[in-house]
Length: 185
Image (cartoon, rainbow, N blue to C red; front, top):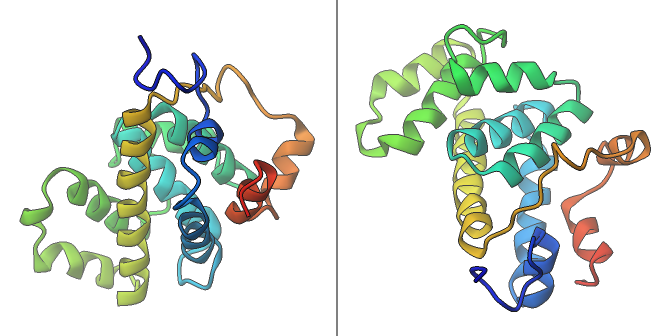
């Protein structure tokens, strides 16, 4: 029996949102503010963090979705795969690695974050705002990964790749547009 018998056999996040629409609008607005609003981190870097955290959490749906978004903003899929395997050898900008180490530690050992962890981020040239935005992205995707896994969402982006047109649309589409597409306004 599926986790939520009222959802399709292989549910997509849209099925969950349509079944339980009450909190969706503010959640998608928060996604827009955090992932598309002003930040010292680029949209590509924020989507990279979303994919990275989702990969660490083994949430295939969010990992696949945000790899696609990161790709739309110029991040190669192989970079994200390499990060999840080994951050130290991954071909990612060295300046970004302290932030990625911080969010990885936040996933597994949040009480063990130290001043040195934050200092390494600042020493790499990032501001407190950049670190805070990275923490928020990581926290949002820990949250979203649990919603996805807890409701049994099983759509696989690797098995259902988007068209070139859909990839192009990711560059301008807001998360609230997703809500509108599925009838939640």
